[in-house]
Image (cartoon, rainbow, N blue to C red):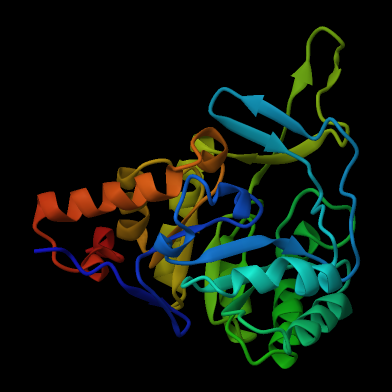
Length: 302
């Protein structure tokens, strides 16, 4: 018997729990992956105005992951709505649009602008990007500021609001509680971990901005810890992400409390990573005789 893989995140029905992480996947993967097979597609973060991002070098490889300081490069909301969104809404896959602002007001204006755009299932509010000078992680490290952003977005959209939280805090559960009270419908955990790398030949930082966000297998234990802690503190569905490269990785996140998982850096190494993770989950459920993926959510806490 084939297991039931369907899940629900803040009212969004997903045929399976595997989605993409914002900024790591786009239509360029279509030759390798049937985008209709995915549970949801989280699109690269957009801002009100176009951003060129940070100057290069802005990516560095590490032994177990990647440092990036791209800086939310994107074409701005108007080009997104006019050019990027229309072909994607034809997919049989929910679209989650990631948004960011330099001020609280920008978050609200962006949410309001997207309210009339067709085909968006939810907004993922990026209050945790470590690679921008204004806004970004600054909003995600103080519970009161994080709550203010979510409250403003909530007031400007009728769509589900997903708060993407930073691991670069002392108590991520406190931030999760604050955004839940402010109106978040779900949580994404985690964004990248702040790090750096130094070229010993030049004796200078490799990244032009010195610091970047670490992602990939190196951060998986940190992400799992965050999901575990937040699951115990907040009764909101969690999208777990951070170093997921196999079905076994994903199962760990479900057991910690995630309802869905997002694949990010693994896509850069393996364009078919999302479907490989999905297949690995299916094989695990069959091997263990589990008829419903939802039986795994939070089961590690029992």
